[in-house]
Length: 296
Ligand code: DGY
Image (cartoon, rainbow, N blue to C red; front, side, top):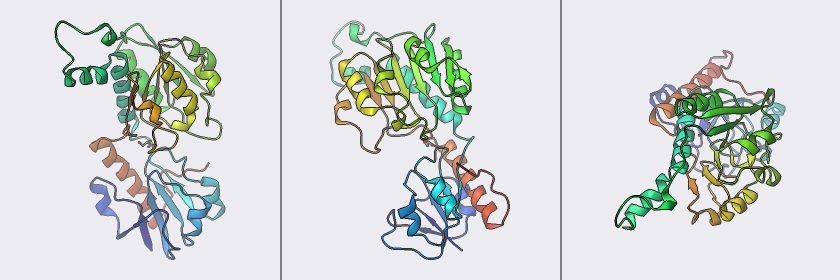
C-alpha cells in the first residue's frame, strides 16, 4: 500500500509510519495509481485532486479544520477522512490571548517605535496608550473546546466573557454590539462562511477589537479591511480568506496585528498533531476503527 504526503510532519510519531512517498507538487502533475493514503495539510482536496489519486482510501488531514477537504466528494468515492482534534486547543487559545494583548497594549507598534529610534524621552506617546483587559468584555463566537480554553485564559486576566453558539448563549448581533473584544472560534462551513458580514462588522463598537484565529472566510474580508482602514476598530488576524495572500491594504495599518496562520505552531502541539494523524493512519492500515473520522 502506498502512503503519499504533501509534506513531512514534525515529531517522533512520524517515524512509526511505513515508507511515505513525498509528493513534489500538489496537486500531482499526473495521475498516481496505487496511492491509498494521503497525508496533507492546508491543501485543496476536491473532485479534481481525487481524480488524480484513483486508488485513494484515506485522507488524513493534519489539523482540526478540514474545510479544504471536500468530505462529500471523498465519501462518494469511498474515501475516509480524518483530522487531528483535541490536541491544539491550548496552543490556539494561547495565540488568541497573545493577539488580544498585542492589540490592546500596542505591543507590535511599540516594538517598531523603539526600533525606529522614535523613543526620544519620557514615557509612551498617547497613541501607545493601551486598554486594560481587566473589566472589558470578551465575546466568543463559538464555544467549543478552543473557545472554552480562551474563556479560561481571559477570565484569569479579569475579562468578562460572553459567548454565542448555535445552541444558545448571547445572540450574535447583540454580542457584536456589546463586546470590547470579539474572537472567532467556529469551524468554516457553508453556514459560517461570511458569518461576520459587512452589516455585522458595522455592529462592532467603535474602538473594539476583532480577533480571528479560526478561518479567514468566516469574515467578509473586504468589509473588514474597509473597517480597519477607517480606523474605527482594530484586529488581530492569524488567518485570511485566500492564504497565503494578505490584503495589501492591511500591511501598512497600525491597528492590525498580522500572523501567518501560526495558532497551532508550537513544537509540542505540532508533535501531538502528528501523533494523532499517525494513529489514524496506523488504525486504517490495520483495519481498526478510525479514531478521528470526519463525516460531514
Ligand atoms: C487547524 O488545525 O485547523 C489549524 O488551523 C492549524 O493551525
